[in-house]
Length: 355
Image (tube, rainbow, N blue to C red):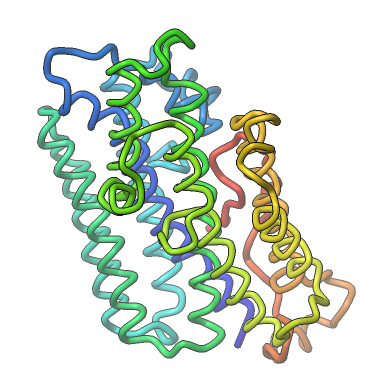
């Protein structure tokens, strides 16, 4: 397959997953507000801090009020990571490969886009209406994933979509966990308090993990929640689950079973292996925030290696006439339209496709 096509399918899925996870991100605070009508001091600034978009937000809005943060993360077209921007980018990528994806996939992404555009024109003022919108964003993402799995051939194209989705999901699960552990809790004295427990429950609900967590754990504790979201091998939003499935898709794309010959394979394999063998006690000795921050940086590096191995071709390697005609046979050979941003750990985006 052409690298241009694989590139677009990779980013189509990555942007869809990013839009869903921004919705989950916001729900950490919205769930707190809805679950505790008596009143909890809402901290909106941490949501901006963990996305790495503080400079842009300060330039556009200044104060981190609820309304400003929600608009910035949801409907602001100037924010590259807002839900509106992500869905628009996903639709543009889908449009560029309509001959490759199924018609059902195109119809679903187009319906998703129209729903978000309509909501942007008539922004909900009531918190409960806003909560319903974020729930609909998540469901639209689920529908797209289901349609893709049911109507697309599970070939190299499908595996590229899986790879983009799973890497994005692992990154955002780590950030949702990081927001709670490092930023939301007011002080160490509040650990174990009703507010602390309420925040952990809100986090689990935002990751659609509360019910599955309750099936394996009887009590809510920071250690158990963090262990579940990082290490559980069966929950599809855990970091370990995402990395294992992403590695499977990467091997299918590269055409290797056991020998990791490409830098992207080695980078992802190394990261997955570290997660396999590290103990939770070692993570807490290192510091959960420090562990998650390093993990996010390693995921960025995996994305960079994928770009280098399968998308980017130095212009001096092949003449332009040859580049345009050659197709994928183990590695990509067509000039990519993707641009690697090489952002550092702690920022929200790993890579950003230039439209």
